[in-house]
Image 1: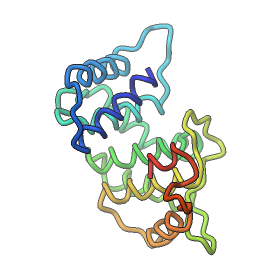
Image 2: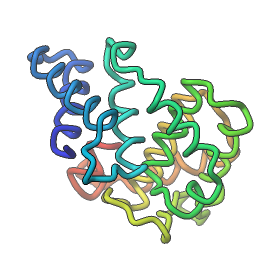
Image 3: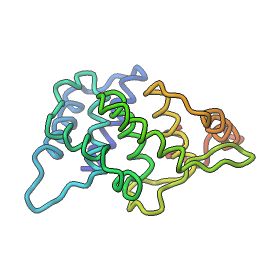
Image 4: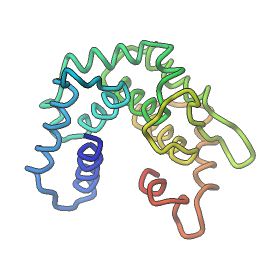
Length: 193
């Protein structure tokens, strides 16, 4: 499942960058992800992080309406409204994706504002800029670090067209975190940034 999800996200990025992508493979992967989160096997419980990440990736598809699901939307709204889940259980990447979905899908101003306020609660300000820390309570499947989390926070604020006094610090942290070779410490970090 997670490999297919990563592959689909790569297909979407390649297509947006102008590369030729096999549409049938892209649709096949999207349909698999859609089925996985909408029709789970009875012996397997899908995590909130899987539902959030899958929904975000499917929302990036050109034909995203085909993959809209009222059941999944209800789950996302419930996750976004659950203070305990947001504060204690969500990784920062999942928080970023849920914040973007909340702003795009209209989960409510109060809910969306609370999600974005969580970024401010997780922020660490120092001389190099403002970074977003990982949630120590979250059993994350993501590779979290300050660069990835800060890049995703910037992406969330940017895609939602939201403002915060911390944006300048986030940008400064990204600039000071860049290595001499033009990357951000690892291939994963560089791709995400």
